[in-house]
Amino acid sequence: MNGAPAAAVELRDVRKSFGRAEIIRGANLLVPRGQRIAIIGPNGAGKSTLFNLISGRFSPTSGEILLNGENLAGLRPYQINRKGLARSFQITNIFPRLTVFENLRCGVLWSMGYRYSFWQRLDRLRDARLRTEEVLELIGLTRRRDTFAGLLTYAEQRALEIGITVAGGAEVILLDEPTAGMSRSESEHAVDLIRTVTEGKTLLMVERDMSVVFGLADQISVVVYGEVIATDTPEKVRANARVQEAYLGTPQEALA
Image (cartoon, rainbow, N blue to C red; front, side):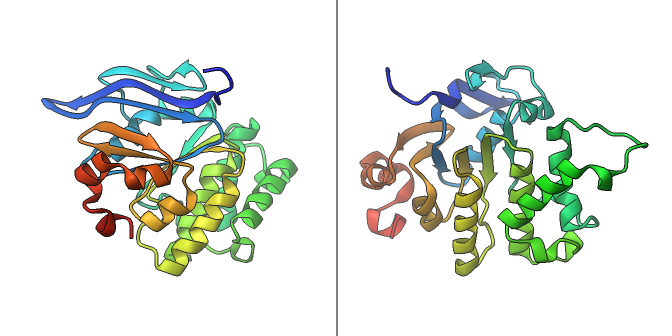
């Protein structure tokens, strides 16, 4: 449609089977550039499998996955990352024996064109250091710069992982349950952080906490039994009778 935002990510009739078990059953999804989309659904609906397909960890059995109009078929996760897509995981994925600064620098180096070299001192790479310091400040961990990542609190580790995800400058960010295991105050802080670091970028996230979803998402996509049954604004999804029946239960139970 003329005037509609271009798609950052698009899924076209995507299917994924493991043996005889069909997990994703003809999923269709369009994520416009610059939008924040939350994927919700019951346990076993296929949300994480969709993330693994988009990021290249799994290959679809059939269908197409496009990033900025380019078919990702056959590409490995690192190749997709170089095309501008980065993701986090449900389980915190950091280097516990490196400092906060060193963790973030790992996320910065490749995106700036640096390759592995025994002859190049990392502390002499001024541009990488400055970019790392920018991300440190962005995620609020400057005072923890020299702390080993394994010694951070859980919420700080999640903030660090989000920082690593965005450090390379990817325009499409996938966050898999970024507030899982957090207290209410920690979740509120995480929402503010995610809103800040994804400003102007495309965000696709899986999240269980409805207050986080409604606080961040421009649109919500509901996945049930491997299909996307609805994609709409939070208000319209809240009122969608099919969504209520298939996933959310009664309106009072689900979205209070």
